[in-house]
Image 1 (cartoon, one colour):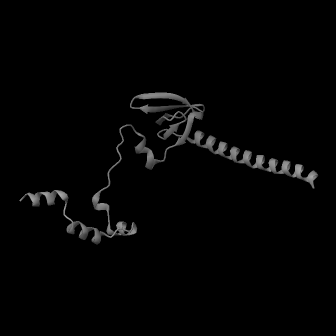
Image 2 (cartoon, helix red, strand yellow):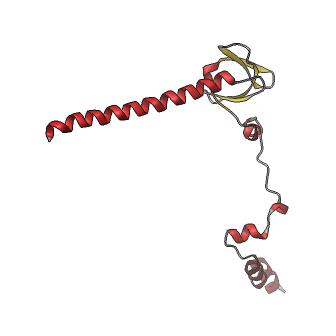
Image 3 (cartoon, helix red, strand yellow):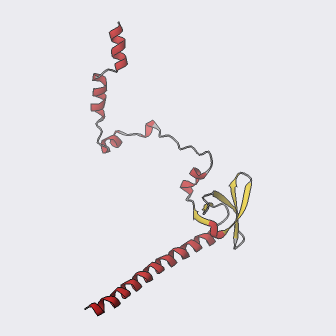
Length: 140
């Protein structure tokens, strides 16, 4: 029994290593496809953490990336970590301010989904005056 245990462990290790290498090769090929498919005007994130817009992608080895208005730098294509989706691109620009929620966008259904009873909260607010109101009334 013990003589079969060692070959079985070696076989399991070989299968694990094979599966790991396969996943790594797949990720690597997807990354290379993404890097080679980058076109002019694409918003990208570089491995250094910089966000920029591709200005010139005609070379097979390098891309020119505008990282700030008027600041164009040349990078190796391998430095492109990911392409930023269009809906997230605005948040990658310097000075971006997250828009505040519009109060008109809230519905009573949103509160009910959270388990908040609006009518109960309104009644409680009317029944319990603020401490500032109590002090003002007490001063009279």
